[in-house]
Image (tube, helix red, strand yellow):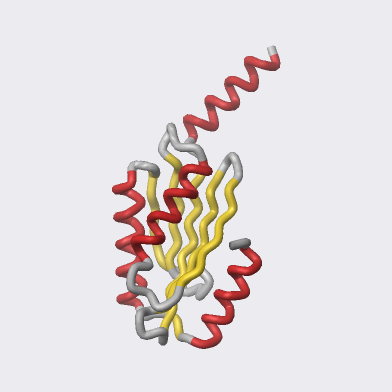
Length: 141
């Protein structure tokens, strides 16, 4: 799904449901942290929560050194599949470049009365970025 369509769907759900309570947000935050850390695809994982209904749970991490951004994006979809189990509705979208995977998702609680949103940015690992810069410099010589 493209990001614009996702934002329209997310807004429609937000208009018809309330943001999840702090306990549900904390549970999603903990689950996201656990899944990202256990996957082996991500380093330097930071997860938190906000009062922004578009991103109640946020995460910033780096791809593991050998993991390209496209592969990290694929893994983020798998992580989301685990986290959204039991939800009444979900949607997600992402953008992938050479430097990052940007993943947004939303779901409703099983009763459909509340929603949770997630925004994860996985940056290319610093070692991979430095290696690309070094190889580019070598080609210029």
